[in-house]
Length: 120
Image 1 (cartoon, one colour):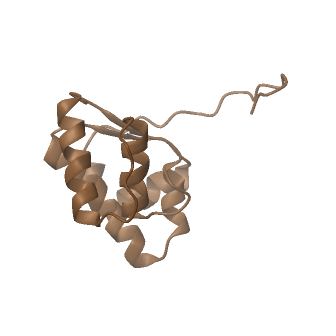
Image 2: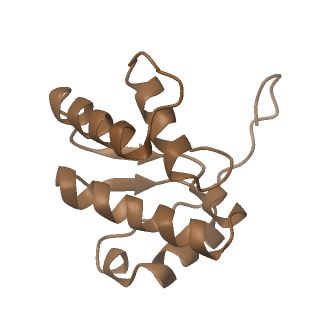
């Protein structure tokens, strides 16, 4: 997930993850349609979004727009969306999108941190 809840940046990151060639200065509507087409063509059955807590970095309107994007993607693709992030992000998503709260949620406890070189 981008460092702030930007719909355009999310779609661009999604296209990059799918290996699509990126074209500069594309309109949001075009990027959205290309993203949906590629998701369908590749047969994506689940979408995992890491660092969902970055949604908290945005202001009210950008947060709402991004949460609407998640709802739209889940509905349009008929796939589950898994969000990975902090508890604060989980509470923000549940609070803003009550429909999401009706699905299964499986919070995970943080395990012991890896103290080896390169560990988190």
